[in-house]
Image 1 (cartoon, rainbow, N blue to C red):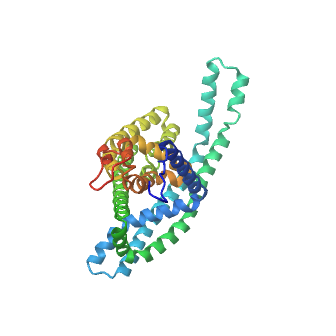
Image 2 (image 1 turned 90 degrees about the vertical axis):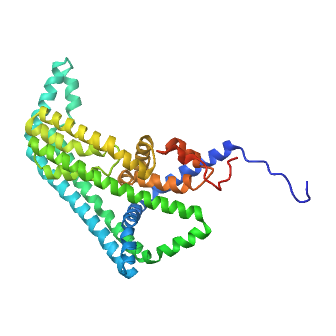
Image 3 (image 1 turned 180 degrees about the vertical axis):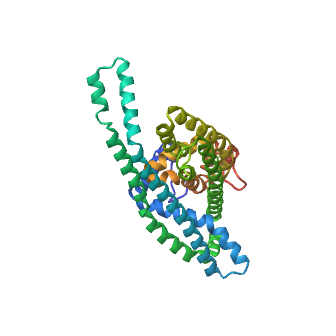
Length: 361
């Protein structure tokens, strides 16, 4: 052995795994601690990435870069404003509708109590169970929840500020990426993969959300359910929540159908929604969404649970883009970690080594 040198024992793989898990948990805890800041910033980044092709197209057409950046930011603002206004309007309509059905809710409540009593349960036990389900109290609580949901638009301030500053950086972005590609080619490739995936994801989700909203609206109109436009818009907005979005969009019109036309109508709404959303969102859409994000349906569902626990409400909206970010920068960019794609990627061949990759230990 040469003088001044000594052999270094390789670190056991078990230790490396433990360190990696600990680092991941610490990162998630940090993200959760700053969720109120990170969620809006990441949403703003998604919006600007999605609108960036408009900037490059305008520049190619001879538009000054600074003017093109302003046009992109104004376009993003317009889309964001439309979503917020639509969300507030739909929630306000729901709040205004609920008090009109307090009598129907009371009657339904009494019917349920009578049915349970007919099954032989003790009246005292039933009284204790249903004492907290006073119809007036439930309707008041539902109204409070919906009112509170409209207050969440307070995060718009952070999103707007972030978009303004990102727009200021847009003119020099292409040059910065070229410089990164020279010194850190894998990072540049990961950035490009993430940007393309984000654009495809939001485009596909928006298109299929519109399709589902139109189909749901037509079905509700045929069944004579009140506030068809509200439920169609609500269906479109909840489509951005992967896996469980259609369930959230289904509950309000089903409840209204129950109050207006009875349980048969409510059951019909559930069946129609389930069929339409299953065909469109569970069979057709994942073929396109999966290609854009590149993860399996199971991974999509787990990511929804994980990111909603870390970032709250925005985590449900940003679950798949966040998963795409981790996949692009942590897994795809690292030859030693690419094997994970065999478990989570739509195309298992993504786990195969690329030319120039060093073999794993």
